[in-house]
Length: 401
Image (cartoon, rainbow, N blue to C red; front, side, top):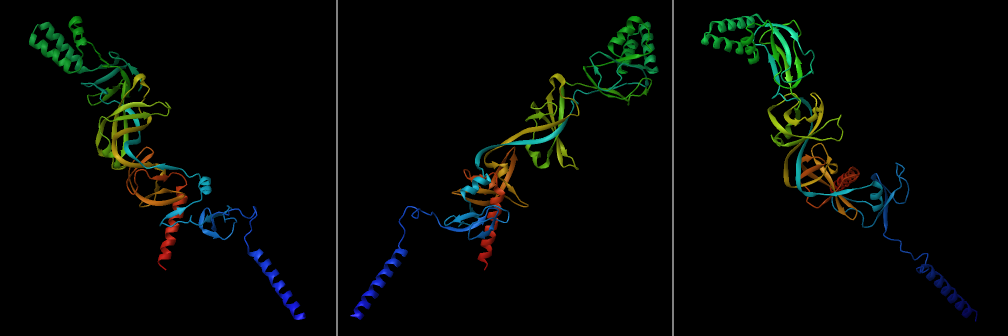
């Protein structure tokens, strides 16, 4: 009897233990514990250092919250990194499309304004003499056509006038014409010769007048100074048209040619663009600066452009058609190569080496390594590129083991 009771008790105890164990192993079905926990977290990583990994949440050495890396988000291709969408938003990652089209060759450089030397007049005397009276006394003085510039005393001119008067008195036509031609050759104006014919009196001073409107660009004499034909008394320049002398780099020298349009902006006229054309491309480079001088011609209405002013110049060179180009800020420049970070979608990015071409404004031509329609990163690309390079290096190390 006692043995039966003992067997029954043992069976009941075993049954109770089985029930308790079964309940503890059974999945919980209540609402609080039945929530979907989502993808499995593989590890936690520092946002700025992909090598800093931990098995639980925490802080990075820089004090930033560790970011979870989920199963399936780890990179599988060489150089491809996967970034959590939240981190992408925090980093402010922006992208742009690689476009195919026409890329204008814009040459941005600097220059300075100068006189139009085609209209510059150098005033010399044709005989030796002395400046008796100087009508203009300073560089920059404005002059008008026909205005008196200076008076010259020259014994040679006085003698030539007296010879002409003697020829007039002799009624010798040949001698008269020869004397008149000699006066003209010595620089005496036709009006002064007519005065001699009418008044029959030699002038001790010969007057020299301005041939056009302008300003005194150079004044090389003062009253009383002795001058010769080699002496530049003064030069008169017009301001209704000016030159802008700019310099372009050697690599851009093939882009510029006469007739191209150009714009100029000056500091004292902010926001105002002046338009002109390329007038002449000089045949040789400066051996010191390795730049090519280019001459631009601009109409100077109102004489707002003044010689020796500093100017920012943009020359519109010939455009290149059917070429892939990206924003300048997307290109990561290295010592011997250039790269971009390509957005592969779904939070995956790849650093890719490219061969760049010309640069125009804020765009850069891509000759190899990138296709039309691919999306490149234009901000925070340096961080992504660094992580991609680290991952590639680690893969190479693993493959050599």
